[in-house]
Each structure stands twice: as C-alpha cells, then as structure tokens.
Amino acid sequence: MFRASEKSTGTGYTTTVAFLLVAFVFSPAVLIISRPLGLVSVSLAIACSALCITLAWMNWKRSSQLSIPSIAVSNGETK
Image (cartoon, rainbow, N blue to C red):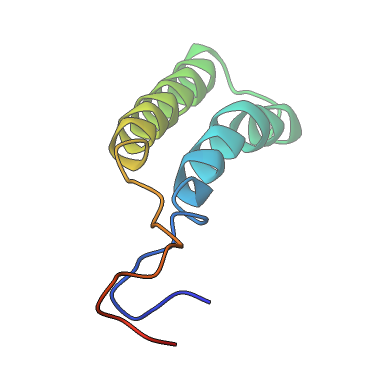
C-alpha cells in the first residue's frame, strides 16, 4: 500500500487517453452521424480533433515527468 506521502502515477494518463478518444473516435463519429452540412462541419471536426490531440500531447508531457514512488522502507521508518 502507498503511504500518505507517496503519490500513485497509475491514473496520470487517464486524461491523455480521454483526449485521444475524443480526437480519433468521438469527433469523427459525431461528424458521420450528423451528416455534415458542408465544409464548416468538416472544418469544425478537424479543429476539435487537432485541439484534443494538442491537449493530449501537453498532458502526456506533464504526466511523464511524474516519478514512481519507491517501495523501499526508509531507515527511520518501521512497519
């Protein structure tokens, strides 16, 4: 188990994956389902996907700098 002072990085990439799902799955699916009304709809879908990809990349860069906590017990600590 983690101590209160340690932080798990297991969910650090959840937001990144969510942004990528919106960019590559939901945005094209909404575009197909709504039957595009022309160039405006396609442009909006591409802009939304590009924004989500950019946000995912920025989130991934921030999350990848987190470190995994050590499981070793410090010399001063006892179980």
